Amino acid sequence: IEKEACYAIGLLASKENHQNRIADAGALPGLVALLKRYPPQMSGNVAPSVARRAADAVTNLAHENNPIKNRVRTEGGIPPLVALLETRDAKVQRAAASALRTLAFKNNENKEQIVEEGALPMLIFMVRSGDPHIHYEAVGVIGNLVHSSNHIKRRVLDEGALQPVIGLLSSECNESRREAALLLGQFATTTDDTNIEYKIKIVQRGAVQPLIQMLNHTESQLREMAAFALGRLAQNKDNQVGICHADGLRPLLDLLDSDETNLQHNAAFALYGLADNEDNVPDIIREGTVQRLMGGELKAQPSKDCVNKTLKRLEEKVDGRVLKYLVYLMRSSNKDEQQRIAVALAHLCSDDQQRVIFDEQGGLDILLEMYSASAGALFPLAMRDAAGALFKVSQNMKALLSARYPNDAVPLPATPETHLAYEHFNNPELSDIVFFSDRDGGWEFHAHKIAFTHVSDEFHQLIDQHKVADTQQGDSHMPVRVDMSDVMQKDEFHGLMQFVYQGDIEVPEELTEENDENGVAPLAQRLLQFAHRYEMNGLKRHCEGCMEEILTHMEDPKCEFLREFISLAGRCNADDFIRACALYTLQHHGRICKSIGDSETVLLAQQIEPHIRQHLQSTMYR
Image 1 (cartoon, rainbow, N blue to C red):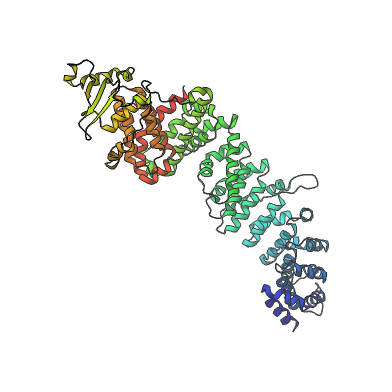
Image 2 (cartoon, rainbow, N blue to C red; image 1 turned 120 degrees about the vertical axis):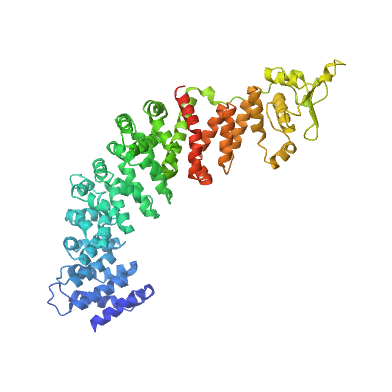
């Protein structure tokens, strides 16, 4: 009857809303009395099954119910449960451990009494048990006891728990392995009486290899706790190298690709620790860690912050002998390593180191080959990494030149070919030259020869070639008339005059509306060709700037537009615009690739590769 009553109470107590009603009805004193009547030596008048059911009932009643946990203690329930750990009946022993585990969870008073009643030695013996059910419950009790309690943690370690817990990492019970990894992560923050850190002892006693094996387990909780433990162990310099040497780097990197927040964060924290040791940095970079950290999609902001700190830490370490060794490795025959190192150095090295690495040591050739290789469509990630690295090198060199030549960083203002007040613009008064056209509905523009004083000889020749013959006769005060019908459209000529008089090419919207509707190239694009043909360098520079602005605000880049822009820039010797097109393509590689596909992106990359090379080499040697 007692056994069945305990069983019924346990079943009812499994529902949260029944727990307090059962306890208020006086169940706890009776359960504690049954526990006390059962001696560990199994010679008492209470059957083992009764003691086991009583312990189970206490477990269910106290589950996540702190007031009942306290009532169990005040009713004297903890001493008999600790005593039951001594029993030779495995089921009773396991039930007592389960009850103590529940009572210790987030209850400091219960923790203290369990320890003071002498539970630790037997719990540690149970951790060594070959029965997975027993060592799982035992390690769970110890885990709850040491949680947020440093002095209990020290007592547990002083009782010799370290090696048994490390042994559980190889248990057949995954739950025990998980609890052991969590416990080792907590032990790693402790020092012994001689101030030796337990994180060193844990590694010396063989924990690293089984923890790394757990990183590859199919169960996510095992991977999470293994990464947690390794992250705490990696706060020691020697351990950092040991974890890397034991091949822990790659599985930690793989965890960053998980879609579970805790897994990502524990892996990111462990990698942050590994990056603290200079001896690890070459291996970290050879593994492609920089690219994976920069390209990872992390869910939580703390994980993102941790990755950023890791990159910053690597940046600080890449110097002196570390940098020399990486440059040495970059010249190795292993192409994958060459590429990973070249990409990483683009992001990590200081600006003044870039020329040596990327020009003298061949880093630029490696990146350009990665970016424009014919097989790039088969390796889109490598092409993406190369594009990002090349753009970063260009930004680094730009920053370096800006620091060395600060005056060059200030763009020159657009200057008109002459300086006339706005009221003279297309004003017949004092006009001595009239441009006209029969196209676009017919138009005239009243100009002033003085406005063309500083324009090129080629433009003056154009005027001479298109003068209307009868204006050379008659009244000498009549304005010269120049027929532009076969030369320029109305909006083009208006933009040209706007620049000559005012220094910009903005024209009223109604002048370009029809061309925009018909898909005619932007005004700046057409005037760029005119300026190149007639060597109007001021207008040419201004049009290049306008085209760069158009490029910057292009939301959905099409391959044909980019190729047309690059081809136009080449025909017009518009070096600044070629550079802008190339850098834009690098900066927005992902968006462009998504828009036009991998194959078209490779063709585009091959088209701009010579311009990228020329631009970067010219900036490096300035």
